[in-house]
Length: 261
Image (cartoon, rainbow, N blue to C red; front, top):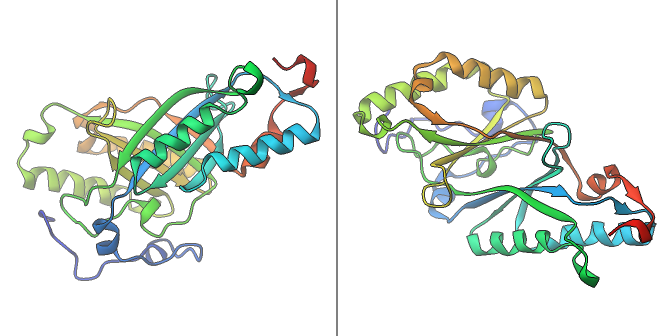
């Protein structure tokens, strides 16, 4: 059983866990010593895009420029998974203000000539990596050497009122069971990040996998363990397919420029 500050004799690296050549080894001590912030931002397209290649090219370039200076974990097409959203972006940085600035730039896209912004905010969640309470060598996938996967799901998470009143040994045992229960899903990369005071939640949980059924499977499987009894909030879910920003633009409906208001 783990205890605060416990480090296993051997700390497995991401490629040892998954056997995936895309993954790479990192030093957990270096990661834990840094400031690591994350921002998930979800937007709805407010109008069709102009149908001329020149303007579409400018939109593609501007989208990428909006996130300049941050590490973009991925751009995601969320259409069809949600009726209220079209684009999700996941960005990382050591400074939350850099992520705020990127968020503002995306929200201002397309506002020239008095036009309404092209992308309207739907949901966002700022969070931060904190060393794990019972095993500080355990890292979130996004900083743990796991390469991005094709599908991504994120949701906010709030523990029950009594969770933090449980003895540390009890919480450790519950979390150990939770980890062992998901052992058949090592191909699903998970990032659990702290969000205390950064929004309305305590944590954000992000799952990435090359197949959507693997994300669905691990979430269903983890409903079977005791840790599930100590959950108060774990919605909304935002799910998307990872795309390049130019691919996302090409997926959107278009209209003649003089009809796009």
